[in-house]
Amino acid sequence: MRLSDLKPGQRARILRVGGRGRARRRFMEMGLVSGETVLVERVAPLGDPVEFFVKGYHVSLRRDDAWHIEVRILGKDPGGDA
Image 1 (cartoon, helix red, strand yellow):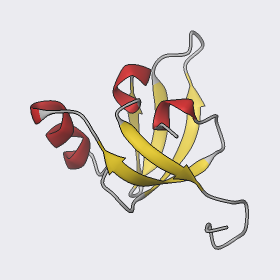
Image 2 (cartoon, one colour):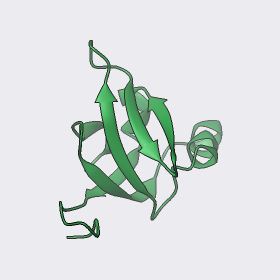
Image 3 (cartoon, helix red, strand yellow):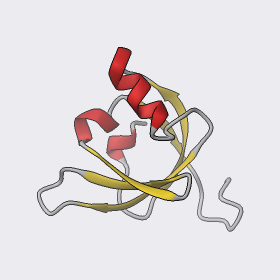
């Protein structure tokens, strides 16, 4: 599943960060790295950009950029892993 497919309130673990060159490096500099947990905070009224919470801060990405990040949805249990 892609990060761009998640809905507000969903939590996921990053499996793979795609993209090439500068784009991939920029994702990683923002904390979007394999193994990290991401929460979808909200979506702009017209659907783009999407605000995520990762590593203790908020980051907004266009859906086109978020598509390059492969994730696995996490369950609703308190520990975050289902």
